[in-house]
Length: 264
Image 1 (tube, rainbow, N blue to C red):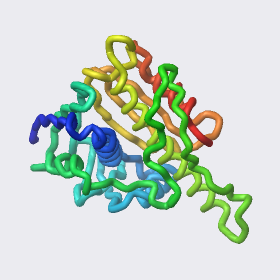
Image 2 (cartoon, rainbow, N blue to C red; image 1 turned 60 degrees about the vertical axis):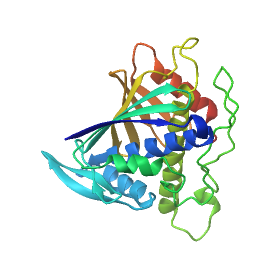
Image 3 (tube, helix red, strand yellow; image 1 turned 30 degrees about the vertical axis):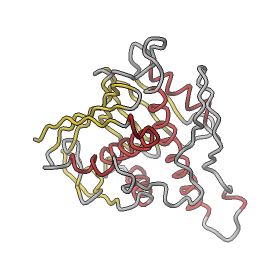
Image 4 (cartoon, rainbow, N blue to C red; image 1 turned 120 degrees about the horizontal axis):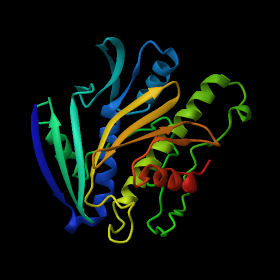
């Protein structure tokens, strides 16, 4: 097991910090994606998700039950492959504690800190926009967004397989919700801890697990070692629910921000 702690200081390159934060969150989410192979609906949906991530594949691991995990950047991930702890020190300074069974995996983070390395997902939706929040954020979390994951409903398209169109639309919504989740975490790292308990500045952030259950994404996230479980679903009326929240109700804050800014 390799343990490394790295500080990335974007003070002189502030315009790149938001993009770097988004890229490392994408990497962590992809590395934690999994499902039980015995659940055919879950396995099919995970495969659809992976097919929309550039350079990503799946592989199988036996944990008593057969599990499906991701293979990304030539690395095969499991529960134990990497653990990434994020701590925002200041507005443009981030500490990353990396625990990994992969030697030199820290080089991936170094590459992501540059402009040239990108992580592309939602590749089946040519109209997607990764920067779905505007820069001006009001204190009541009302963040205007113009992104719309739904372009044309299945009933409006003739001569196509309706079931396939429905699945692709659900996949677009799933990636859209993941983008909203990432942007919400980013927003919570920008607000002052002195004036708002929802601030993530100075707190330890760990995404522990991202499991697919049928068509739902269950995200287990630790904030200062307190568990929050968030369920994302490609549903119009109830796309996010909080299964477990911490004492500060940060999970509920994340839900409120996503619900206020979803555009479908």
